[in-house]
Image (cartoon, rainbow, N blue to C red; front, side):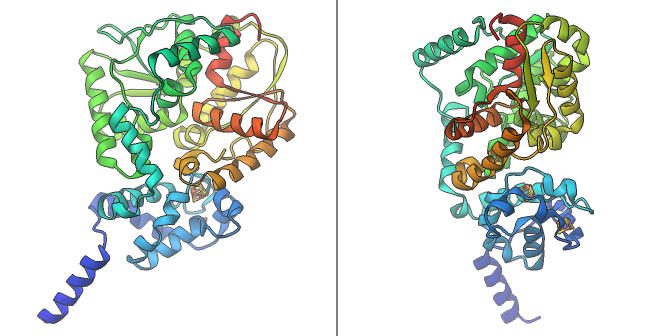
Amino acid sequence: MGKKEIDHISRILAEEKIVVFSPYEDEIYSEIEKCQNCSLCLAFCPVFEVTDKFYPGPRGIADELSRDVREFWRASNIVYMCTLCGQCQEKCPVNAPIPEVVVLLRSKIFVQRPDLVPEELKTLLENVSKYGYIFEPMSNEERGESLKGRLEMIGLPLTKDPPLEKGSKIAYFPGCQAETRLLDVKEAGKLVLEAFNVNYGIPEGWKCCGLPIRLIGDSAMADELQRGFFEKIKELGVREVVTTCAGCASELRAAAKHLGSGIHVRHLIEFLFEEVGVDVISRKACNGGNVKVALHEPCHLGRHVGRYVVAYAERILKALPNVNYAGMKGADECCGAGGLLKFHDPTVSAAIRSRKLDVISKSGAGLVVAPCPLCTVNISEGVARRKLSVGIDDFTVFLAKRIYSKEV
Ligand code: SF4
Ligand code: SF4
C-alpha cells in the first residue's frame, strides 16, 4: 500500500472518528456477531412494539452495527432508545448481550462524539457533578417538611440517619431517587433494618451509585465514584452494602466485582430473606388489613441481579399475615423508565408504561408493590394519570408499614 492510500485511509478514519476498541471491549462487541438474525427478540422488545417499528429493535442493533463500523455513529440515536430491560437477551437463543453492547456504545459515543450525547442526559450528569445525585435535591427546609408530612400520612416514625462507623456491619445505600424524590423509601429502609436489629450506618457523603452516569456514557466517572465509595467503606472495615433500589443493587454489585473490591452488595430483599428469614419477617410484619398484592418485577432486579431475588420477594409477600398474593401475568415487563428513556424520550417511555398499566389493571390486585423507587415513581405517575383505583407502593415502604403502622 502506497503513501497516498495510507493518507486516504487515515483521513477517512479521522473524519469518521472510527472507534477503537480495547481488547476487553472488542470481546463484548464481537459477542453481537453471534446474532442469527432470527427476529425472536423483536417480539419481546418493548421499544420496538410501541414505536411502530421505528426502533430497529435488538436484532436491528445487532445487524446494523455489525455490518459496518461507520454505522456505529449513524446508529447513535438507537442506543439511547433502549431501556436496557434485558428481555431480548433473555429470549435470544444465542444469548446475544444486546444491553451490554448498548452500554458500551454509549460510552464510546460519550468519549469520541460527545456532540451526539442527548442534551437532557448531559443535564443529569451535571446534577451528579454539582450535587452528587442525579436530581437536584430539595432545600433542607423543603425536604424536612415534605418528609414529615409523608411519614405522618403513612404512619411511620421519623428517625435519624445513623452514620457508618467502625464496627458497623452494613452500609445502607439509599440511592438518588430515595434521597431526593421518594423520601419515604430511605426512611422505610432504615426502619426495616432497625426492626430486625441490624447494625448498619449510612456512609457519610455518599453519592450516586454510578448507574445513570454509566448509562449516559461516562464510564470513567462511574468507575471513579464506585472505587471511591468502596474504598471509603473498606477503611471503616465494612464489607457489605444493602440498598432498596433495584438499579443501585445491580450496578454496585457489578462494579464491586468488576473493580475487585471484595464488597458484597445485596438488595434489601436478599438481605432480609437470607439473614433474617421469612418466618421472622412475617411475625414482625403483622399489621394491616386484608389486601390483594401483586409484585412488579423491576428489570434491574429480575434480569440484571437474578430471578432468585424476585422469588425471595414473592416468598416474603406470601408469608405476610392478611396479604393475599396475586400472581400477575406480565409482572416482569418493563415499566418504561429504564435506560434513562424516561428522560430521553418521555413519550416512548410513557407508551411502554401504558402496557404495564394494562398488565396491572388485569391483575385484579388492590395494591402493586415494586422493589425499586424509580419503578414506583414511574408507575405511580401512570396510575394517577389514568385514574386507576389500584395502589402502588415501594416494596420497602410496604414492609415498613406492615411492621410499624397500625393503619395500613
Ligand atoms: S439478537 Fe438473538 S433473538 Fe435477536 S435476532 Fe439476533 S439471535 Fe435472534
Ligand atoms: S434491552 Fe429491552 S429495550 Fe433494549 S433492545 Fe433489548 S428488549 Fe429492546
